[in-house]
Image (tube, rainbow, N blue to C red; front, top):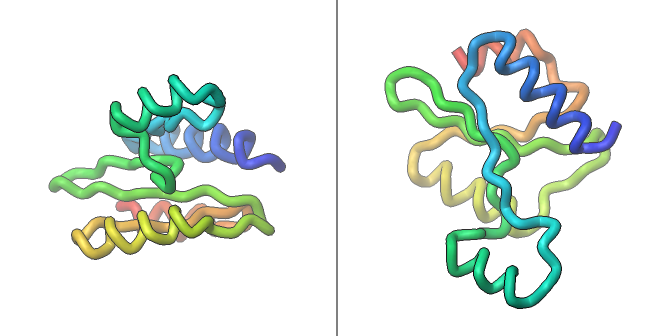
Length: 107
């Protein structure tokens, strides 16, 4: 399963279970220099998590999606370190993730 297909599955599952989830499109398919520069000036940042889940009591959870063999890139690991140092939650989700355990963790 491609990561994009997995992301659709995760978003559907989260929304079905009442979670407020969204992604931040980060210009991944922008290839020309002018648009890359404009996106970066506008806030595009490498390594941002694939999904953000908002929970009650000002809880914000960052989810990085990977295929079973996928690995975090250096920028993604840095983003994880930054958000965790600020007290936010971050988790890497793969197709083999236990959905019940994920549901409990997000509650």
